[in-house]
Length: 206
Length: 206
DNA sequence: GTCTATATACGGATAGAC
DNA sequence: GTCTATCCGTATATAGAC
Image (cartoon, rainbow over all chains, first blue to last red; front, side, top):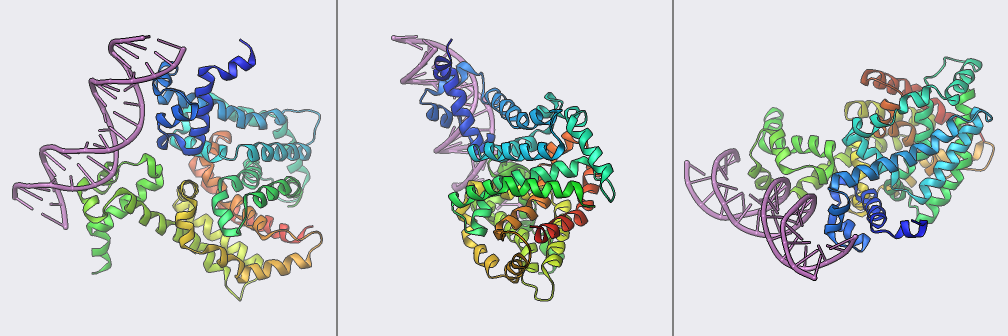
């Protein structure tokens, strides 16, 4: 089956529609009818291809999770870059991803909250972090700088907080700051450079 | 009516139960039956006291929003403290609040996403920020430091990202970092001091 | 594979007894 | 004010024609 045929197959149409609607409204608030309509197909086809709403959701969730984590894991184990360059690349690639697909973080945070074990257990992310080149470089950076060494999760929280939070809080931030969509996106692009500088500072200062 | 009577009144019992369940599961996923059960009361009483699930939800949403914003607004307009002290106090009070009520941020972000205008329009938060003592002090700090002045919303994003995001991403962070609940809370307490230092650094460095 | 029609379950809301 | 019983719309899932 060619790529173009695959994209247009009924199964792919359903998955693409399901992804869009689930990302926008979350599991509980989406109706299978919404997905069928978004796909331009009959409701019965959802059950023909994917047994149930739950099963369809699980597939979308897994793919979304992999896409989101993939952006990180790819950079994590590069031997040729230092920690600051890694941080800079993660920041840039996440901001690019989230400008294109801004609903992903809220979707993921919600559904991980609903079922923390389910998916997260599938991917063994925990060992991915601790055994990474990134973790080794982080420990080296901590050893060099003044002050107490900080748990690596503080660094992960900072990186994600500075990059991902604005997309989760977007509706609130737009109101508080009186920001248009264009202005918001422009600020996110500014943040590629800014966040890189801030996290580099955190690695040095005591 | 005395305080103890008020706390135990049927209306209060329903509101307390509704708050707990809505915060935990969000609007779409909570059933009025869940709330009745949590309150130890009959389902029919919800409609007797609060017409509909929507109406009950709106009340909880408004109260939660006010509680969340209140912690900020209170500090915003204090004339006697500098900007760094304000930041430090906001960080500390938010972390204390969120250790007690960790579901609030995800709840608020979700429901603001569902209906950005609804509530946010009610409170005119936008003018609260721009007319605050805090905003004036921020502009002064920007004028003094080297480099281009940064939009105040970058500062708001940083403050909230560093403080609030960990509570939103808690299930993910616990898995990635192999953290127990106790360890997670301990790290959040550490962050009172750390985040204060980081944001102070952002106000100075170019 | 795709459709129409329908079975079945669930959830919000209310009627009416007490 | 509070309960039990029930109505009724809506949503998932499936049966069966084409």
